Image (cartoon, rainbow, N blue to C red; front, side, top):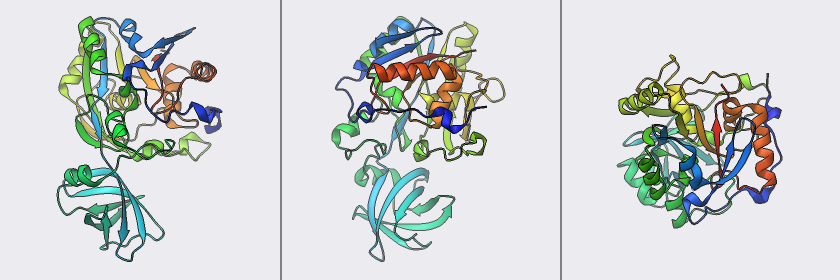
Length: 339
């Protein structure tokens, strides 16, 4: 039985990528095999997949979900939208010296007022005066991860989105997808690799630390996902042909595995709190493309469950020794399921 401290490691600060590379597919790729580690370029992924394999991408689009504002009392607040509930209502984190009261108003970005509603756990319900997505796009700021030390600029607004981002709703990017440019996608299609899409709106909870040494005490943040019938059919076809189902990122993995809890992948939409740790029996995904994750994070636990604890420890040690770039703007790995 693993505990939180088993997923700790020491990462030199300078290996945390602060900016993306100019070319998306120029990142490095660590191929993690059964008994070998191979240093590659990310564009080599085309050579590592076969015709009939299926890549499953997360087409969520990152919202400009961070706002700064003031309460009616004049106190400063920071708001991070967690989830859009409908076109006038959101759940959000609100940071302020004193918690805002239900019924009060907060002026955001010196542009519009929101009304504070009831608490929903750690989040506040906020009512917007008009269309949420329009106000977010016009006045919000891109919420870069906490370990990126600069404020988001226009370059981040373009590069902290996948080229296929379509469905607005995430507050963090599905970062494994950031390595794919249109040229690489076209090369994959030309080889006969099939592409499919799910949507999982990544929440701010993806950066929430695990606070319990006993992993069974940790409660995962909830995220909304949808798997279309078209994608479910593409997965079934790949499985029937004996081909790999490759999740592009842990968010695609989480959606596919959440929709497979009956033993087979089912189309549909739902909230998921699935927490994948070593010992989990994977049902759909056979390979995974993913970035390098934070120490003691649920995502590091997920990849350890998928590829094997010792293999991941060895891969991370190798990546640090070889000066790979870590986290959202960093390099990637290609993992194969242990069983």
